[in-house]
Amino acid sequence: MVYVAIMGHGVVGGGVAEVLRKNAASIAKKAGQEIVIKRILDLREFPDSPYADRFTKNPDDIIHDPEIAIVIETMGGLHPAYEFVKACLENGKSVVTSNKELVAAKGDELLAFAKQHNLNFLFEASVGGGIPILRPINQCLTANEVYEIAGILNGTTNFMLTKMIEEDMSFDEALSLAQRLGYAERDPSADIDGHDTCRKVCILAALGFGKHVYPAQVHTEGIRGVSLTDVKYAAAAGYAIKLIGRARARDDGRIFCMVAPMLVPKDNLLSDVRDVFNAIMVRGDAIGDVMFYGRGAGALPTASAVVADVIDEVKHIARRKMIFWESGSDDYVCPYTEDQTAAMVRLTADLPETAKAAVTAAFGEVRWIALIGQPENELCFLTEVQNEQTLAQTLQGLSGVQIQSCIRLFGE
Ligand code: HSE
Image 1 (tube, helix red, strand yellow):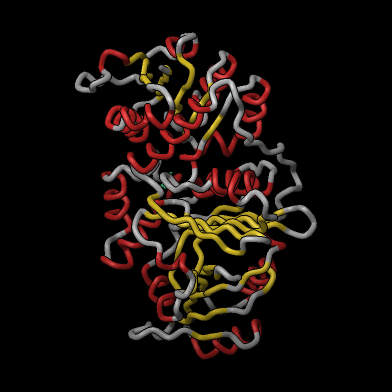
Image 2 (cartoon, protein in one colour):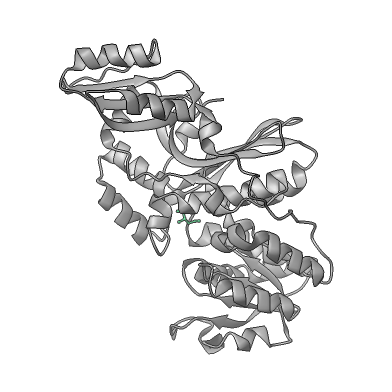
């Protein structure tokens, strides 16, 4: 029998307790022994829980209990999760976490610390909810030189964009529905402003390319600036707007890494990813393109990945799983302004014909997008691929126009 403890009985922690209880017999068979929850840390009371007698408000009841071999951290947030996880490792406990903020900020350090103590630190659930993605990158695709990882990594924003596009739901209605369904972060700005996607792409890049990427190094834009009008112009041109996290290897050993809404061509599988689903594309030199798809948020899908890690750790008690990456460096992530992109630009102008001529003079031939019922003073076009900084400067240099939006294309 192995004793485990859960830190944080929220959406994910509650789901983990439920899965461990509901599937106890089959989990015991797969793990080789029974997995018993000894303690659950939470400041709230859960008198109706089947584990009501095991709740504690004191982390030391877990950290200093020598019988507990594995701690499941599902509190979220950097502090005090970081201190608790470190203390658990120091006290000889392997850790499983779903906490992407923790892994994106401190993954290199905690992996090194776990290695030093001959323990395991696993975090499959931190990216893509229930989708198996980290283990496949770390194990099944390990023969490849991975050169790009990109995908839809946030269920809440994908759910919101789908509801807005397909059901004409307002931004606020879609957000409160996502919150009611347990998809959104405690602070929804983490979803909407792209920080959640940023943390996940940092973890994917670290694992795929072998070196830590810190969230502050990643240019991050969310979906607040995406309007229904943009969505309609994009659709008219054959694209769907998705919030994309993307990391690409460069020939000089550095990488580009960015989070932004992007126009995905309708013939790319990512454009069909709806609702809370996530999809992650991995490109490797031997395998070509591989796509991972599934539920990226929610209690049980995420718990499914957490419990799988727990089972793996039970099977590897006193043995280490090989998962590791180096610490990052200041110049590892190349400034996004040096990257290349095409973009869809929407602008308004009092003199649209003059503005059209100015756009053509500045950008050369562009592809104009027309929409039925389009206001007379509104223009929308697609640029050619060009340097990010040049694009921004050219837009700034256009006179007599108001730029309403500029959304990048997700190119090959
Ligand atoms: N808020 C996150 C999402 C939860 O919507 O994807 C899973 O990380």
